[in-house]
Length: 217
Image 1 (spheres, one colour):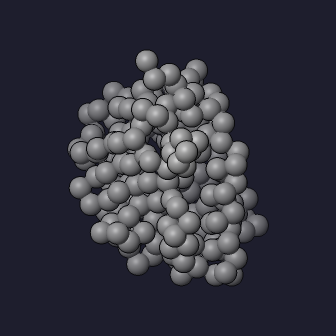
Image 2 (tube, rainbow, N blue to C red):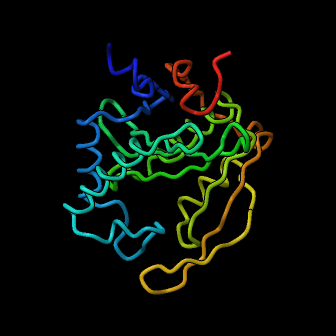
């Protein structure tokens, strides 16, 4: 037996004009951890609700590894988190998540991502988001996708506007001992279809469908 017989997600691929998104192997994880150690954002801001990037470089790298391993171990068809790495010309440039609880019933996914600082401002974040939105809506049959970003995370909010997300309320979180407001965002299928521009090619999905709580028929 091969790994794919027990863990077909290892063969899943999402391809856009510049990127390949895949579940990482150990070498991919090492590269992603290295990006985290180098820094993910301006230290003056904190774009994450869990402030993992406020730690020292080696701890940031280790947290990336532990998070991916935890999500692998906790995977269930009714509660899954697909953490993909994005590679451009063979180089790992960032990570994109698409996740859901009770997807077969609720038909809703959430997304999150980060890109290494040396690869930012090149449209990679938009292309990663386009890949998982197409995956969710076209291939999994999602009805809605949700996301969110702090009010000062202008880059993430701009990506969401590009894809047609609608405001979905506010949340207040404690960040570095201060209140910070998250803008919740929702994207229905019809609005995504009217804003869809990036071609996405998905392979290796059929064998994975039961892991997302879906049937292969």
